[in-house]
Length: 225
Length: 293
Image 1: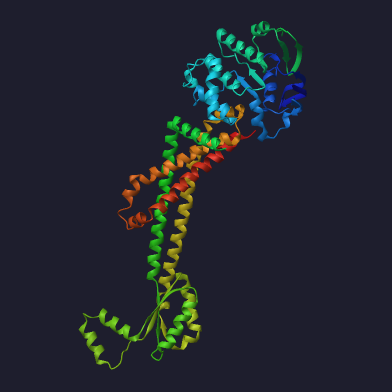
Image 2: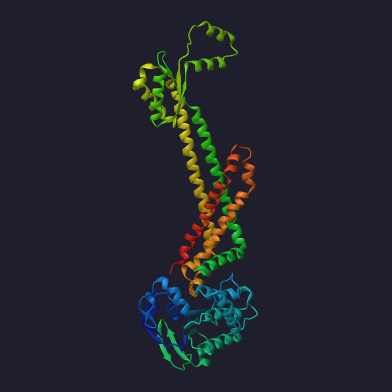
């Protein structure tokens, strides 16, 4: 379970988050909506400890992650995988190596890597693209590669920050279907988006944010701003 | 653990290969750096040899009076040796002096003839003193003039040559200081240029570094391949700089070539240690900034 407790994040001159309280249960599928600058990304970055709150605590299964030491961050980040709008693939590694990297980092054996990576790449529909570099892939393929990387360590939580922002409608739905499938297999998914159609079609819990505050939190919610 | 280290090196080697142009550029700069450093090493050896040769030419001669016995002179000799600032004392007996004199003037029959007219050997016995450092001559002379031997000393040729000795001493120490300053300045410049090149190479990878962190790589897992890359830069650069025709074209003209050849492994060891050192340390420093948080 994830708990944001009285979180504020204040940059010089800008209040990014203001007294946010939020609970997300494990295995939940949550969408966070809001306009650019509403604080969605900041909220997600607190989970991966890319940012620290100015006030308040972030708890993951009762562990206060905002006060973790930097040497404990790698293992946290192996439990929480991220998917980004700009994919964030390693440009000088092939698709296979990008996915394998997540396993290497976690110290998995070579046998396990050569067994797991092809399975996951096949799952996301990239079985014919093992040995190509990110710049040789289309946008949709890149996003699927990054989803494969996020999946491969079987994380507890997947954070998807505008994962469809750079994709055409067809690829968008591919990605969303993948996320739903991943969630059905037991992973918590937190999806930040401002795509109205996705939100309304998903019919999951919707958290609406505006100017750093949570303005609405509804089960089976809709995109209302 | 072992698997990690293996992975780190493999990743480093792969990055090195895939960033071919960047690696080539970085290595080229490092080759130039190492060439500057090896030239400085050669310069410093040349200077040292020249200075030593020069120093060996400087000596003073103490002439003893006629009544100085060989025993007493050898006493003085051993006292001098015990001073610790004397490099070498050479005793020249009256007979030696005479035969040297004859040898030197063998073409001058008049001189030799007049010498043979004499009943006695007119030449004094003497010692040649070389100091460990030419600036010590003044001390040696004052030791002789104040010590037990002062009565049997006829003459010391120090005062006649004093200006010359002082001038040479100054020249030697200036040369040394200048050489040292040159070495410091140029190796600093060379090091900084190399360091910056490695830094730029790592700067281009800053995006990758932040991604690796997000995927959950530990700092060592991120840093390792860059260090391996730096190691490769240094190693290859030192091999290239060593194989470079520059050194070979430069050397045969001088005597140092043999010296260089005899100490090949020592030289190569030093140069590759410097190369690898620059590569690894630059990477280590340059990546630090990107690993924070």
